Length: 92
Image 1 (tube, helix red, strand yellow):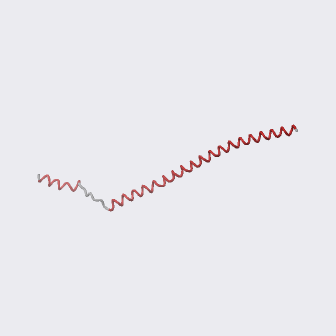
Image 2 (image 1 turned 45 degrees about the horizontal axis):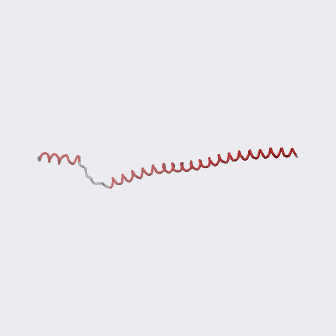
């Protein structure tokens, strides 16, 4: 049994590492988190800005279409009034 323990003591340092965490590990983790945030923040910000601009454009497009239809209706009404006015002028 002592041969087993001797063999285990020789092999153990190769497989069992120190469980402690040093400063370099924390620094690496913090830097990787900072890089991840630095690369994802602009993408999220730009997507948000594009979303709000497209909502505004959609709203303005709907208003434009409504105003265009109102303009057609008013133009038709003006044409009717002009025609009616021309016919009434010829009668008097």
